[in-house]
Image 1 (cartoon, rainbow, N blue to C red):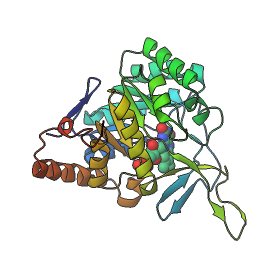
Image 2 (image 1 turned 180 degrees about the horizontal axis):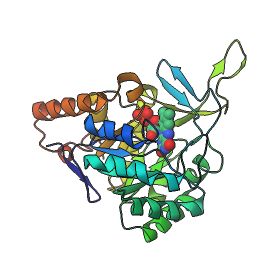
Image 3 (image 1 turned 30 degrees about the vertical axis):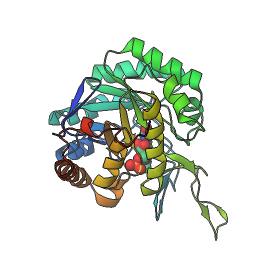
Length: 298
Ligand SMILES: Cc1cc2nc3c(=O)[nH]c(=O)nc-3n(C[C@H](O)[C@H](O)[C@H](O)COP(=O)(O)O)c2cc1C
């Protein structure tokens, strides 16, 4: 059985749409749901509408994507209708939010009012000054934001952490009042155009995602699972069912899929779900819990 319950939210399967990929609009989230996703996470939404950076904002590399979209989003007040749309499919919708430290409780409350089943705190965007890794690399800020949001809402709170840090366990412990951790956001990087002799992205730095970052994500999940019992949602470089299994064996309770949609389209959800089912049958596992964390050597 593929159903998993994370902090009280029941997902029909453990394969969710990651924040930022085809999820700024209700109809594309609905599409992911209809194509088999167990749940969807929205694009990170802030207080005000943001246009994001000028082009180029995405570079396609042989082993993944480098993006610096710049947290473009319609602003929280314009987002209710998108949530209403995706709720038609009756799968859990997790509202992702970003902002300055003091914005998080307000945005979380809005997402709760809009009907989101949970809220995901983006404490980890690597390429927007003042919002992302700067918060996510500071354990005190992470601890305070999570606690303040927990005080304000009664829906489950997920904290999404950055890999751009020496010791992810330290930040994970700072976020331990969250109901679940989401590991990992993109890895800070850059790409140089060798003929223009300049960085390719207009923002210079970007966030690296896709197959190349899977070992980094798996390691982050493994390290945190070794030390903590909190539910973990693994994300980073999942491009097929084997990758999802790797994350689960390292301690994830569910996974999210982002960049793979660029490579394989929405059919990736059914592909992973089917592969997981066959793997579990062949290996004698009845539930995801039966093999979550099995690879962790204590
Ligand atoms: C184009 C793009 C936009 C993204 N936007 C967001 C975002 O708004 N909020 C967020 O928390 N993560 C965002 N991410 C990060 C993804 O949710 C995910 O953590 C990361 O890409 C690793 O997973 P993947 O390799 O499956 O893409 C974005 C990633 C990409 C590629």
